[in-house]
Length: 298
Image 1 (cartoon, rainbow, N blue to C red):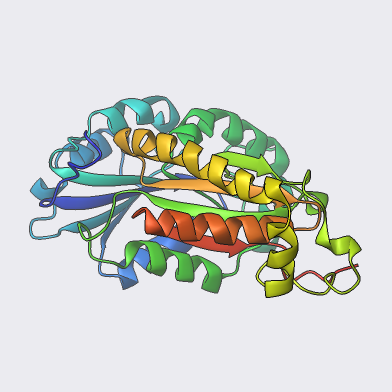
Image 2: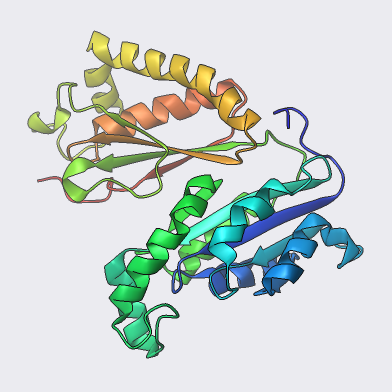
């Protein structure tokens, strides 16, 4: 489907999938609160028929969310075919994939005392590893990947309401997420493009700038004094101007871009803020998240 030809009529369909224990039920409840008609765990033959023509089964419902995962035997194998069969001229679809770290998933299964559906008599970790392998292709096809390892119910609800609570058809199809982070705290999950800005001189080593962040005027002045900073932002902007329309042309609804420096407080924050402003000027909705900006400068 052409990037400018998303359907203005017909159903808006959100397919929610992912790993067991990653929060799919919580996300489904959020969609219910938004007025979506939510369908959970259909048998595979019924799921195929439903995705082909949702309106035939829920007449009068324009916003529909479907939860589907490995509880339906054969789902991982058949999912790519089901997605390819969706008629994008009539259905505005988004694939959301939920995941979490092994540690978080093991803890959740331990707290609920429920067995992992693929673990059999073994520990949950074995089932988690099998499920990751089976769902890898589907994760790669997702429009939006959410890592819920450190998220609360309120975090999940906030994101769902922010991204899916708006009226469809009033904005560009693809939303760009910009996330700053510190490499010393690990790289974020679910990032489509990642840029390392540690080659820039670090404001951290200036005692007056250390407690500030990349949002503060003095830090921005320090970075603007480096020719490489302005050129970096311009070159990334130029690259995104080339890539974004092409990603959108492939029916992507979301793109996540990570920008990292050492601690995630100065250089990456400033770069993300500048890029977000440039993208907004170009008509691309951009949401910003500074993962490590609140960590204490040391």
